[in-house]
Length: 90
Image (cartoon, rainbow, N blue to C red):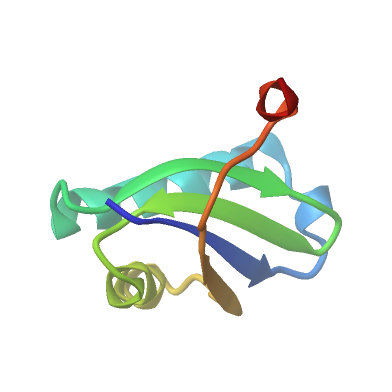
C-alpha cells in the first residue's frame, strides 16, 4: 500500500504541551478508527511550526479525508517513492 508524508503548518507546534499532543493524537486515532483499517498513521515529527506525518493509505484522497474529518491541516501531501538509510550505501 502507498505511503505518504503530510506536511502540516501548525504555528508554534514545537511549543505544544504533552497534554495537547496527546489530545491531538487521540483525535487522530478516533478518526482513523472510524475510517477503517485501510489507512494507518505510522509516526509524526513535530518541529517549531510544522508537523510531518507518515501514513499508509490507499490514495491521497484518504489522507485528505482524514485531515478533513479531524480538522487537521494538510498543506502538502507527498507520495513516498523510496526509503533510504545508511544501509542503502552497503
